[in-house]
Image 1: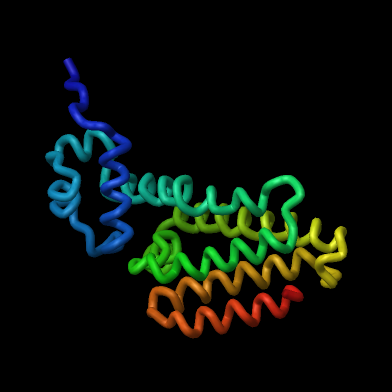
Image 2: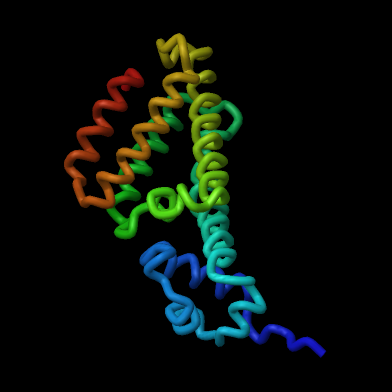
Length: 190
């Protein structure tokens, strides 16, 4: 008879997410996971398959809990230029608090050449961000809040800026982040 888990799978997944986010995939050993999660190797493999599968699940959890919900204000009915500005300001402020940077961006830099799942998840997030920006910018243009003739291109430009902001935030260049935010606001007419 198979033994049942005597721990909460999701709680342990959150712990794994934190560890992978801090150390990356290669620098996190199975022994590190066993110690950090407080479970034995058998339970780790029996529950999550292997280290790579656990990493992928942790990355998906990060996106579901951290990245995608942050887009809700941009996706809201009637969202416009103010919601875009608010999102950018919150995003810049968040970089001061995330000393490990973005888990997804870290995963891209470390694993994107070897792991199609990392590429797929990043594409999903980037498409979601671009679509959310484009929707809000289109509404802003329709209401006369934005003069851009191409909200889609502006959304792609903002997506690009976000990735640079993440790198500057991880480097601790907070003054440069504020300067970049000022330029983005000016580009958006604010």
